[in-house]
Image (cartoon, rainbow, N blue to C red; front, side, top):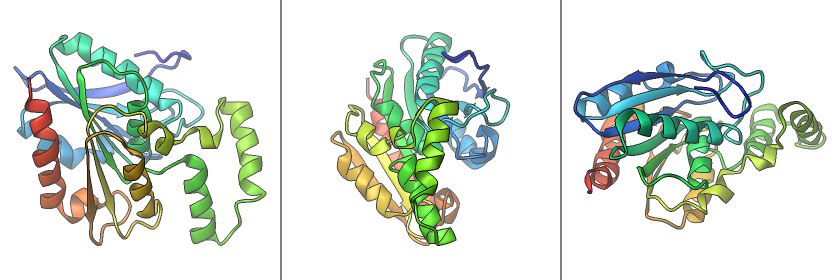
Length: 244
């Protein structure tokens, strides 16, 4: 598809014949759809779901010079939603699933006005905002203060990419959500602190569920405890998707 700013965006579609349900999946920073969802793809397909693995802008086979950190990608996500409705029909049912930056993308997308075909969302180890996660990385991994690095970086991002780092704010956008959301995070995540999922969960005002996976690092939850991870989707998301 083509984004609003003229980028050619790529995704890989896996059909499930006869099914009107689809999971649209969004990967993490510097990854691509076919990397992050190699295991979960089989899980969804085996449970009767079509699957769309998105390459977010400036990742994989999608065009783009600047990474959107969810701020720009949410509008791309809405285009993918519209594309899948056109492909599968007005009676399709959509769940959005994202990890890390993709999780933040999904949460920011829930703050938009979405078509009724979008029934639920799953956020795995999402950050509250790009500014806050970069501040955390500078402090905890490099022992550096946010000032003056982030203000300078923010100016460059605004000038070149057209958005500001705190504009990529999943906590503010998820507060506008109207669909059920499943939040998951590993308690050993050193890149996106587990404390952020509690902030996101508390900000969410719709039907929700929180699952913490013990011992899981960043984007490790579905591998560390697949039974718990997949079980949470089966018990919370699948019944919502099966409703008429």
